[in-house]
Image (tube, rainbow, N blue to C red):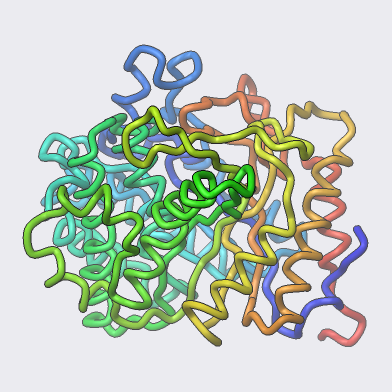
Length: 443
């Protein structure tokens, strides 16, 4: 790699990220059912109808996985805690075995010198709450705050930071409007309410965390570099609409207490009555912003379609296994835009960036190494431009359950054989380890 730790500011954190449902094994340790368990059983929803019942069996292999982070010279580990593992029915009875697991996880991080970055919700709504409407039910804000209190009372004294929600756009829009993720709805009313209730739950959970005395609390949002496919007025308007629904809806609610006009054209008539009353709590101060970035979105107008009347366009750049264009410039642009337009000097972290590639043990991993290096250059450029970027978490530590794509797409620095569950570090793992080795003057 062209860049190393010495090219970044002192104290810049390097780590890797995972998510509970994708690695732990939801069938272990008394965890309750989630809407992903049932969504995966629906026809055509998930490749080969695979689910996270076993995943990477991180539940039983946690120590070895934490050793992989330590041995790579990582500074921090971003993980999520499963709502259904802590509260199998989403409310009520606490699963002590689940709390004990996360207790060991946090202590395991600290024992290895890793800063624990916790995410409270990474897409696994307990089935019992999904039965009540999940993210379409306004009570979800209080349900989530109650869950946050339970887990925070157990591990909050030792985590380095807490993010409320991971990728709000995926939780609400991808899952309730496009139908690609659980619960798989394609309903504008459900989507509008989920788009608002996700923000409401973030705000209510932030209030609860502050009441508990917690510091260093924020949220993780996913952004794309949205661009019009052509210079035509129609495509320019289409790109503005997509930018509003994908990039601006959540960050503007959190930092400005508003929703973008281009998105309200479609969602406004379907928002819950009195939604404006929630905006003050939603827009309370956060301590950091997590930025997830993978690719750009080329957008064209689709005049024959209903709102938002947009369609994706395949771009000319090289693609990952997901079919996503490799576009590091979009990461620099996103980080500088966040600093300029929304968060100012607030600390930011690239909480996810990585690529899926169909690699096997012993195969060439140069494509992923180049991907990481080019995106590290984009981060360095954003810092030079004034963005207060304080860390980078590669997605993901392990090949894992990639949601609707099952176990087919491999994002990991570490190869996982899903038959034996053996872990084998890839060349990219070793390249990143070399790049982030301590500077000569570090103690």
